[in-house]
Image (cartoon, rainbow, N blue to C red):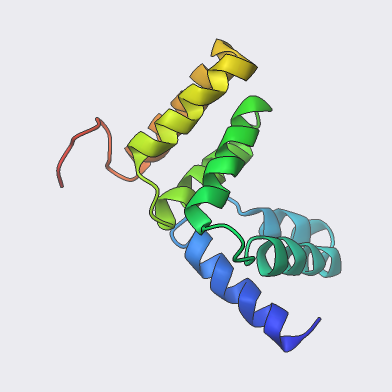
Length: 132
């Protein structure tokens, strides 16, 4: 991989995953295969998430909607944290989650909202409107 991709990976990872609670996918992958973990990270974070075709906020909204619809709450938690890191508000994230109910159903929406609430509690943002 080029030095440029390595730098983009570091920059994007720092933006998305700073202060993320819990195990990051890179750590999990690397625990099983360091080389593959690095390759996956360079592609996903350094190439896919570093693309500038759409804003980071939009990319995270799409990711949150997809993970909600697929009921992938572990990964959803990571991307809710990333969404907050790139400037998405809890209200916007909740609205994206509510939008998925039309296509994915109430159970997936409820699970995703519980995940959002969990992240907000960890960050001292719950209940909504709470001032620091």
